[in-house]
Image (tube, rainbow, N blue to C red; front, side):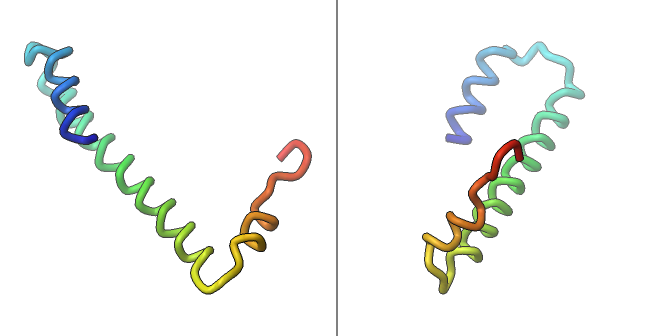
Length: 65
């Protein structure tokens, strides 16, 4: 996925974009990857050694939350 996304971005930008935006794009990708990894870890810890039904019941939104 990451490789395909980079190829797509390079085709759109054509290499003529602002050089400062490349660093920002890389930083945002890095932060997004970290966020996904943290979410994956939180779910894995929540489900480890427990019943997934309990996890779903406690994480279900109530009303306007």
